[in-house]
Image 1 (cartoon, rainbow, N blue to C red):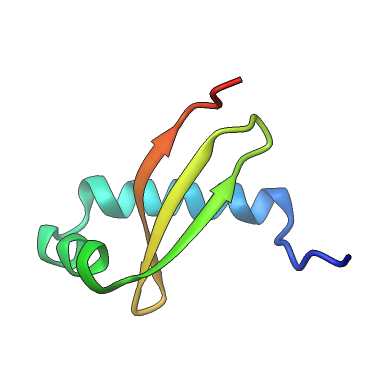
Image 2 (image 1 turned 60 degrees about the vertical axis):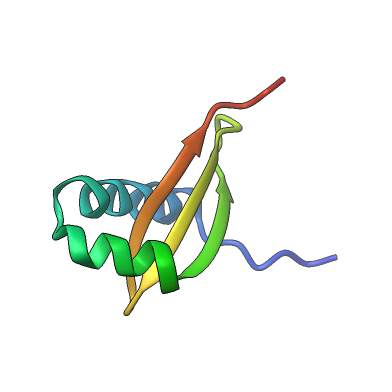
Length: 69
C-alpha cells in the first residue's frame, strides 16, 4: 500500500500557517473555512491529531488534540 503523504516539514509548515490564520486572520474568513472548507485530518510526528479546514487554498487549524495513548 502506497500512502501519498507530504514530508513532515511541509505538514509542520501547514500547521503553523493554519494556526496563524485561525488566530490572527480575519474572523469572517475563519468562519467561512469552518463552515464550508474542505476538511483534512493530519497526525503529527508526535502523534497529535490536527483538524484543518482549507478555504480558497489557505489552511485554517480548526482543532488540535493530543495523543490519547
